[in-house]
Image 1 (spheres, rainbow, N blue to C red):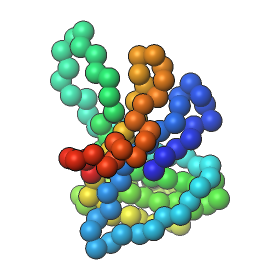
Image 2: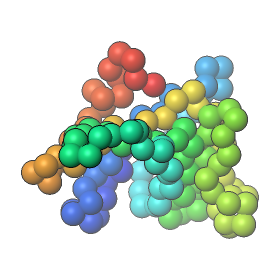
Image 3: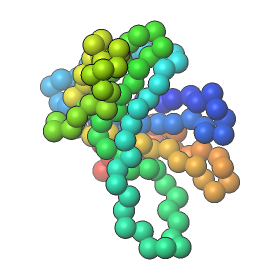
Image 4: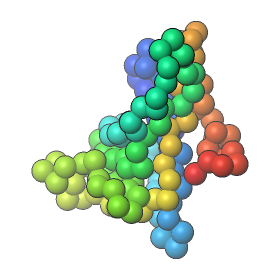
Length: 126
């Protein structure tokens, strides 16, 4: 899923989603909306070490389109990030996933990296 961020300081973003086998759903959406995700707990990184690369995320993601459509991408055993009190929750389609990762990051120069499909298609990915 590629997101075009209108805030150029934030830049575009890319999530790689592997749907559960036997339950693939075609999702055809192009337009504005909001994305809710949860960063994974940070790794133990010694002070002074800088990591340049994708952010680790939990395998649950909510996409709420401005037109009212919504999708909850959730791995078995995880809870959806969209609270049931959110009006979009009632219309949301749940999409079972095996894996989910965020492949983009900001380089030291400020430019965004990892917004191409090659990061999602690499061996050992989702």
